[in-house]
Image: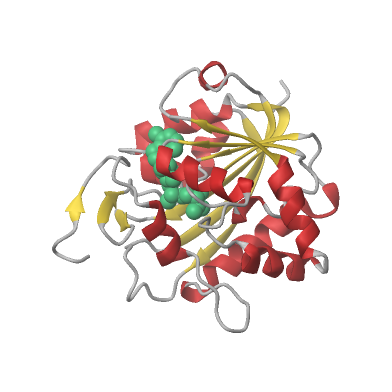
Length: 263
Ligand SMILES: C[S@@+](CC[C@H](N)C(=O)[O-])C[C@H]1O[C@@H](n2cnc3c(N)ncnc32)[C@H](O)[C@@H]1O
């Protein structure tokens, strides 16, 4: 971590442009440029989760979308009603800019092309239009709110995804449990939760500001999800061989899916 960075527990200083520039780049061969290929790993897992319309329903909520829409590319053909819920106004504006197709919006086309390639789908332009149409709401959300369905004026949803958010927001393990429980109230009985978290990290940075993390082991995350009323908890873990050069100190990532118990 660079010494001039500020330590903070708030996302008020989250810098959308810097976050996008640091995390979402393409290599010349059209593959996302990411440490030990974590981005292809993530997008491939999302592709597998949604492939062939395996998940039923129409309404999907993404919690902590940030300024980024790439996590929704594989979902959009099956979920025509997507809500992006995000804490920071700057991030919400970045997503809205992309949905409106404004000139200074981040260019997600290379990511859409990449995911279409993974799916064996050629018509990436149509997928871009479909994703823009599918993102029907971009709303404020604070995962600390205990009555999230009321706060969001929506829900429960068929699918709720939350990618690299809950682990960063939680102040400690008990807080993580509470946040998972809040988010679980947004999932319909029989619906699906998709959760992606850093493993065993204590902080990360957007390049300017350092954000603390709660140290979470995979076993702890699985149990927190089960305790919040989910069954069929499945996951895929990406273990980093090295984190040299990263602004982050974890050991890897977990991609977890679970079904909300119908009882
Ligand atoms: C590491 S970013 C992940 C963004 C995106 N999901 C991605 O994969 O790039 C974490 C996101 O959580 C959002 N966030 C922080 N506190 C939050 C809260 N209390 N409720 C909801 N979202 C929050 C941040 O603004 C940020 O966009």
